[in-house]
Image (cartoon, rainbow, N blue to C red; front, side):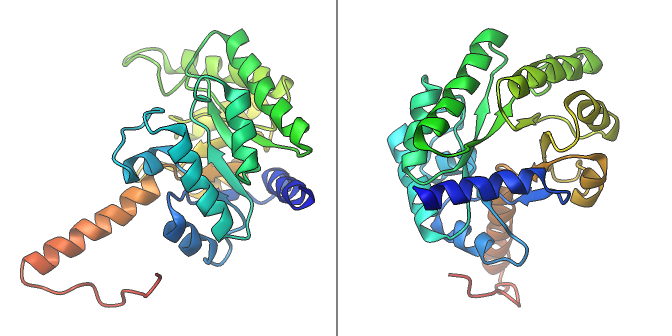
Length: 260
């Protein structure tokens, strides 16, 4: 357990350090070992969407929790870095799900609020943090609000960002060290959220072709940027392109590395 506590403290320190924490999300053992073996990688994050897709399930807690946790446990066992898990919305019992994740070796996690009533969302945050304290670790909760992501098309963006800030502040007051706001990529919106939440409190997702570079996010005061399901899509895009080239009479790409 002391090793688990050390990993949790390391992960927390990575979120508060001046340098932004960049997490390329993983979904199985081989993706985890490849990313963990990359220079500069200091922690790993799992992607629930990608793990579900690996087993043929759609995103959104459709993959059985036991199966989800089994893959996460395998990932944790394959690397020497702190691992944070996407807990989705907590599978109906955020505290119990966090407890089981910690038993699997996880020291941090995302938790979606699904824009539920704020009191309910805060209670779920508190339950996850309590599970960490009960286990003797500083569980690094990346409290996610979907206020922007689930805002109706054509609705007031500024109002959605303001609601994300309101909910995020409540999560920080409940003890979460950072707040995740997917759906935010514009510089002005990120600046608004950093001002509302404080520096080194906001985490965002990197969206291909839309997001700011990690170094610019760092300069804006963002604590962490992750890639969610997009790293798996990068891998699958390369696979489909390679398959298409071979089927069309060509060859596999030169420079392909033996990473497994």
